[in-house]
Image (cartoon, rainbow, N blue to C red; front, side, top):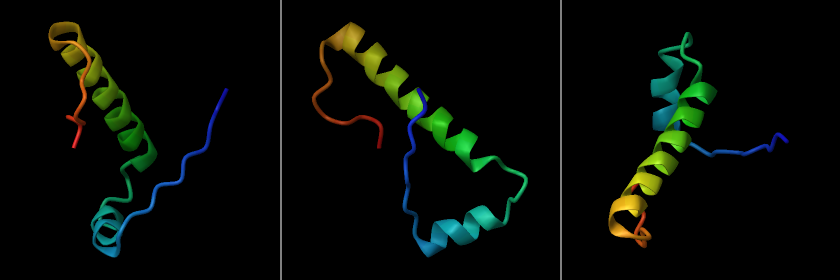
Length: 56
């Protein structure tokens, strides 16, 4: 199943991203989400549940 997520960015980030039209920003965002989940899962394996968000 596919879900839609809307992300709001400020003008500064939009302008910076527009300098690199060849970058697939959706793929970049998806990889970031997956990396954050993986870090949280790994941290949980070694220290128990992660209470504070470490993906900031």
